[in-house]
Length: 294
Image 1 (cartoon, rainbow, N blue to C red):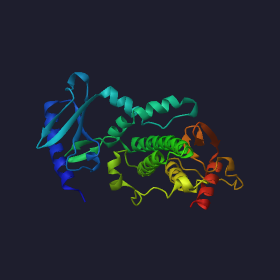
Image 2: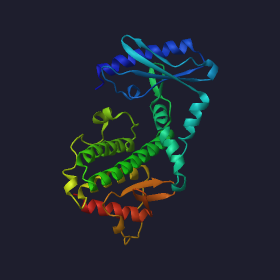
Image 3: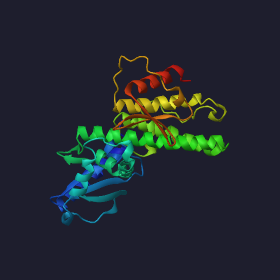
Image 4: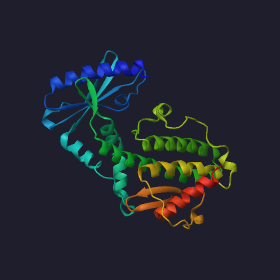
């Protein structure tokens, strides 16, 4: 059910968009962010973006309308076309991870484009098409997988040094990252973490795994591996082959190994170690997780 905070802001957004369209002919006006996805709270801002030729665009700014802050951003048509170019294909190789870092830096802008809607005959129409939304989904899940790997590396080091209070904080962040990966895999944009309890695709729970510091075998980590693997497989399906004898790579078992999917294939990664996988090996590893998860 849509909340009154959402309904009120959508009414204000509609009026504001119509006023901006009248004031700036030849410019596309769009609503973006959480409100465009039907999410808002009692003090939420309204994010609006104008897109057009540079000489037609006003300066960005913010103001209050009926007690609600409007945040106005502007982009040239060329800037938006360059962003849309990143949504034509998911392409990142392990020998060019600098490209992936650039994509991750631009992910908030891509999220704005993914959520953006224009007003047409009283209806909010998505600006990104379905194929662009699909590519955004792959980038978003890849970003969450990279974040999970980084947090896991920190977690290993903190637990090994007995810094348990810090490890607990990082573990909480890892659980949030996994939940956002699952939301992204379900086709939802990467919105702020405060919205996760409302959009999570699984029952929301804030409890961390029980006492990981005392689990020297890292059995508690298997569900983490499972959840990330499922999220990645939903974006990059793998067909099982007839090679049922493929080993599950025992040397990459437990202790923080997580899957990654790049254009040049599947990998298991732990810190700076990366092991390439065939599709069959990835499935064998995933099946092993299913059979041994706590």
